[in-house]
Image (cartoon, rainbow, N blue to C red; front, side, top):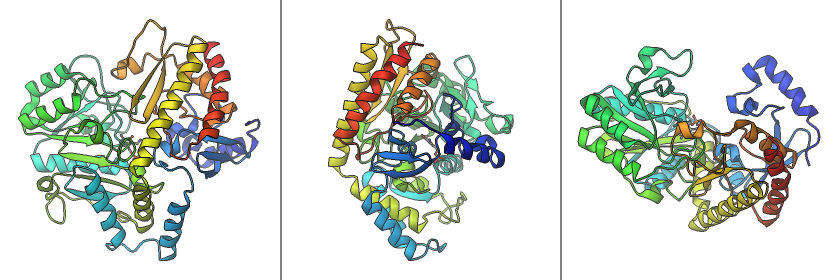
Amino acid sequence: MPDHTEQSAALFDRASAVTPGGVNSPVRAFRAVGGVPRFMASGDRCHITDVDGNRYLDLVCSWGPMLLGHAHPEVTAAVQAAVSRGTSYGTPTETEVLLGEEIVDRTPVDKVRLVSSGTEATMSALRLARGFTGRAKIIKFAGCYHGHVDALLAQAGSGVITLGIPGTPGVTEATTADTIVLPYNDQPAVTAAFAEYGDQIAAVITEASPGNMGVVPPRDNFNAFLAKVCKDNGALFISDEVMTGFRITRSGWYGVDGVQPDLMTFGKVMGGGFPAAAFGGRADVMAHLAPEGSVYQAGTLSGNPVATAAGLTTLRLATDEVYARLDETSATIQRLVATALDKEGVPHVIQAAGNLFSVFFVESSEGPAEIRDFAGANAQVLPRFAAFFHAMLDAGVYLPPSAFEAWFVSSAIDDDALAELESALAPAARAAAAV
Ligand code: PMP
């Protein structure tokens, strides 16, 4: 049971002196929930331990990558072997070929290019889509996150078709002028945008099943609709599977709805805890990429031998049995959460996309019954999430420190861990009920 945070607090002070906000990625700072971010020192299977010696059941899994849990012996061995051979050459290597073949085997892409982060993958996919079509505009959906690509950091305003307004200082209006932001799951809005700008739209980019506004799955065959409208208008359909890829099924959300994108982006699980990501797709589109084609894209550490060894080993271990286990674990956790919250009368909606799920604390049990878009996700009772989060943390369960994030399970979660979770949920549900 975590009861002291002195070392984390001291490190946070030192970190804040040398790094803005004390963190190297904003959500880690606990701004949404308050309190001292925990500085982790180690991970072992489904647990992580902080610098004060507090041990937590980990339901963040590094925001997705740690599908098999922490310090998996075979992944660790593969990484150690790779490191002992040297860490980077800036030349092609066999491991990146094997990883590329594994990705092509698991997904509908014909060809793939490795990069180092999901942000790079979506940025490059957009450039390629624009280069291939010779068009400038892109459509994205409010509440979908595709990394911190300038053109994608645009928020929706009111109205059916909102021309992009930069969502952050530092992104110029010119950069987002070609970004059209639409409400998620809104087919008429997409139809209207294509009616107005059809011959200027290079691509529609969407999370295959969004997880960055909480989990808000596509409804009414939304992805199939997007693929068709793109095809009819000569635009490319880009499915961002950075979060869902190799996590929800052996391919990703594609394994659930089977909608064929023109381009896809991957990250997280395929790096096995190292910086590795990818974009890929139709052979004729990928042929436009340098050095085969003229759309430039490159990276000093792309296809890094250590990262690709970790990713390849992770994917090879992620068998159908592993995905079945993840589904079962996720269903059990969802059931335990629902039971605990129901017992205390806390209104909530749990939404899942395969084993990925999140819990929305809604205003009342009268509704809404489902969250369909960013506006719905924004109607959450945020203080209730914060109280729940801290009670879980105090009871030794590490949840995403924001109400707008998915919960991630690993195949290392066993019955003992589920028992830990169940006993943490009772006080956490009471804490949520008290808000
Ligand atoms: N796309 C999606 C769907 C993501 O969830 C993320 C990261 N959470 C990214 C892109 C960006 O990936 P990265 O953080 O590796 O740049």
